[in-house]
Amino acid sequence: MSPSRAAWITAVLALFVAASSARAATLAKGTFELEPSAEFFTQSFSGLGSGSQTTLTMLATLGYCTTDMLEVVVSPAVSHQSTSGFSATAIGALAGVRFNFSAQGNVVPFLGAALGVQKFSGDIGGSDASFVAPRVEGGIRLMMGTTAAVGFGAAFQHETSAFGVKDVSANDFQLTVGVSLFPGRTR
Image 1: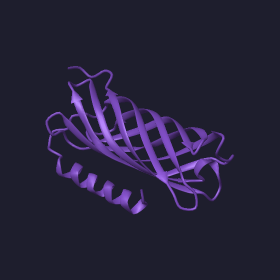
Image 2: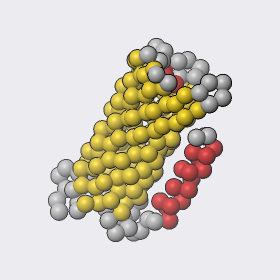
Image 3: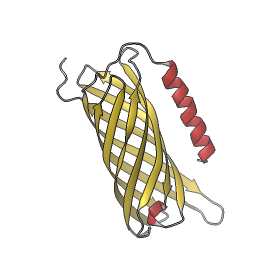
Image 4: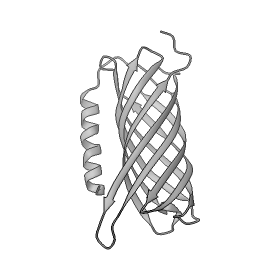
């Protein structure tokens, strides 16, 4: 997917999220969040060569709501990528903020941005650290009472030194699904 197309999809998602906000906040100041999630990306390519790439990323996001709508998030991340018979695994971390719009019924839309770093090992990749800047995400949480939610979203991220190779960059668009737990919240 081209960067301009990914940016257009992110902009449309942002408009949807902004249009669906209401007045009452669901995630109050002081709320902690634990959000294990998975992201999946696949592509086929042709031209000078042909092949395919598949990426599966697992995140364990920890969040803290500093206000009724602003959440600070950090996440360790493990990503496995395979490309035309070669593979690499990356271990890294992301840190950023998430804006949780006011609830519309049991739906809480959100937008977020983060920065990160990751280190690759495996058949493909170099020895340099790969930097993620920016990572932009948007989606919705479907609240299941006050202590849990199921989240769906999309994320775009730009990587410099992609695969740990200096002077190589990548733009990734991923679909995300996860479960959020809010420890300490009462029904």
